[in-house]
Amino acid sequence: MSAPPVQPRIVIASRESRLAMWQAEHVRARLSGLYPQTTVDILGMSTRGDQILDRPLAAIGGKGLFIKELELAMQEGHADLAVHSLKDVPMEMPDGFVLAAISARASPCDAFVSSRFAGLDDLPAGAVVGTSSLRRAAILRACHPRLVIRSLRGNLDTRLRKLDAGDYDAIILAAAGLIRLGLPERIRSLLTPEQSLPAPGQGVLGIEVLAERAEIAALVAPLNDRITAHCVRAERAFSRALGGSCQLPLAAHALPEGDDCLWLRGWVATPDGGRMVCGELRGALVDDESIGCSLAQMLRHQGADAILQQLVAG
Image (cartoon, rainbow, N blue to C red; front, side):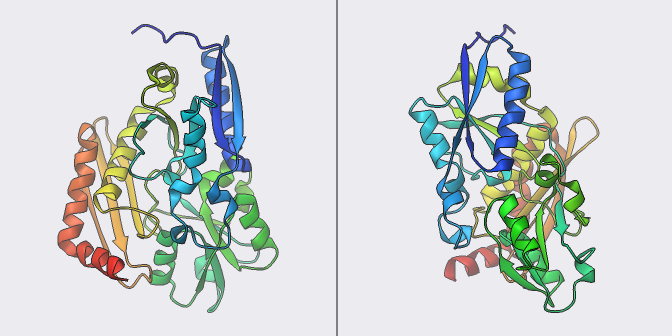
């Protein structure tokens, strides 16, 4: 395969939060190493999802609010690609855009963060736990009904400040973000996938480009991790088949088994955690999306349809 043509300049669109900029810098460093003759710049932007912090994400339009401005920058020619935490990318890609590369996964786990307590089991009844995720909230309500779960919006640094100010007794965050920002000491304990099954794409970076920009897709192709990409495609297909959105508490996590197999676990729940349906499925790596769709169909037969109907009616 011939090398992609050299580009004199590549511009990466990114949110301006510290974590988003770390992610963009990470991709810039990778691209600069691959293409030393190319200047790689970052265009920092503020998105609606960053600006509206007084309402739950599900109430203001969902995950797409974090990426619309970045996509507009690409459409208008101000940027060539965008870097996202893949768990923040809607399951249905907008027309004209593709995920051109999926990074190797960092830790997929949720992290328990607290200044006073070592883990969830150490929290007293009535302790306040903050999270912005319906998935995490449903798990907490189902497994720890004695706790008070409150919404927590803002970037990672804002959430940590609210915890340190005493607004919450503990908060649940993605471990990967804390590790990437050099804050592993803030993690009091990791929640295993058995305790808190991750969101689709958690711990993974996705690189989005315009579908028509084949030359940019070719440039970022070396950043794609084949095994992680198969796993993430299974997770996202599972979520997509269940209408996955910010209004639906849903989890999906795939792991490779051997050289050519994949193990996918998934669940869907009501927001109060009162009803939960879970399952798992194994298959060939190359059948990633088929595995995701098949597991979603299994869960529908086991009661997920009733949960989905309840959410629509509510």
